[in-house]
Length: 151
Image 1 (tube, rainbow, N blue to C red):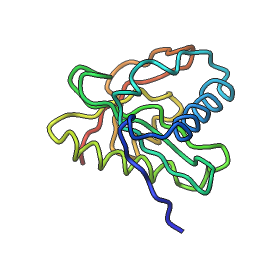
Image 2: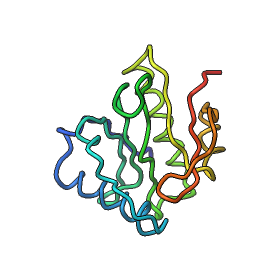
Image 3: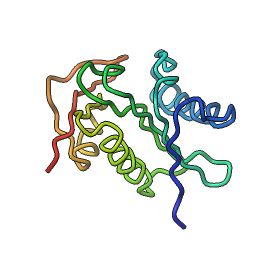
Image 4: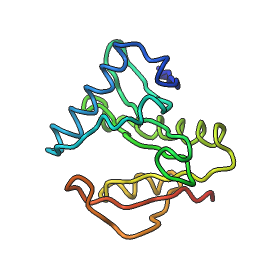
């Protein structure tokens, strides 16, 4: 069964959906990765949020930032997360493809960048991203800057 991907600005998220998004991000980025960091960074109210459910289970989510909000000259995709209960199903690729299509439509003249955990660089490369600078530590986790390079 095909899962529906929802794409909405923050103000269209219900309180329950925002709760589920924040809970999943905390479950994976804070608890699972043992990384204390400020997830609520003030950018979510300005972002578009993509998410998909199966019943009451949030399967995957991410956010798209307009140019100037994450990077001065580029749109950004971030907070990409798949529920541990949905890993290995390919849904991460499905929601990432939807984000790429949406971002290209919403911001057609702009580049797309992201900050990838280093061990996930090949995942993003499979979506057309290339490493575009030196690696760095972000919140104690190795990251690399990446930008979308159309084929």
